[in-house]
Image (cartoon, rainbow, N blue to C red; front, side, top):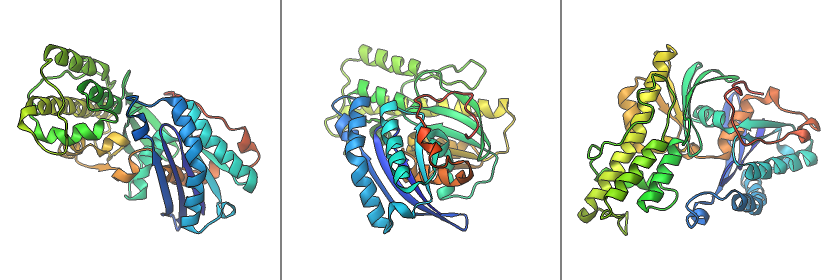
Length: 351
């Protein structure tokens, strides 16, 4: 079975051709175009610009992907495409591309919830049995799931405001580090004292597994306003002792984000009596080195999605679609499919 995966939920255009044989996934080609450099000047994603960039890049990426795999669009058996959640304009760009290919080939389409795809990407490199605890940490979402099967995801905790990745990016903007800031903060935090500043953990005493990162961001802003002599170094490539205070802030800020996730995950596990289940961590923030160390120290069995499959990518979309081949929408019914921007807590079952 040959599956085409299309991911355009935010600012990453990614295409993958994945072959499923004997229940094993083999990636034949996987191409990606990121828009980080474009959005540096804006300090974040501009949906309309992102949509236009997807439109420019998706056809060349599709052509090159098929060339590398030595396949044609008529060889595919299934199209998997992200339909929610995400930015509506970018989502529709990918969905309309999938519909165009379906019109040409009359092949079915499976609509992918890319949050679930982030977690199930673990199956690309690891063998994990159900049930497991899914920890999704990305730029747009932070949530805990009790994954009972490939068809059932029970939401057991989520942020009520900013996501963890959003906290990194907005904090980076306050610190003058540019966009995206997560990887930069991770890199320079190794030079800082993470215990130097005591930033607050949001909803620490709420007694439940809800998370909040907006207060942390405000705390950072207030700290910087009260310490105006602290500024970002011109270079992040080498250590400079003149900027030790700055490194300490970054390390302390990063530690608080990671500690928030650890603390609330422990609460979710306790409240739902899930102590003996393995933990799968996916999403862009799963690449963070501090988070990986902290979780590996705290939890007995924790597995991280491979870094190349953590950010939004076509491979996780193709993989997730392959797990739900029997639920795909046949042609021409698939042409009625639509995208939606939000993930609602009631959407816990695979369509």
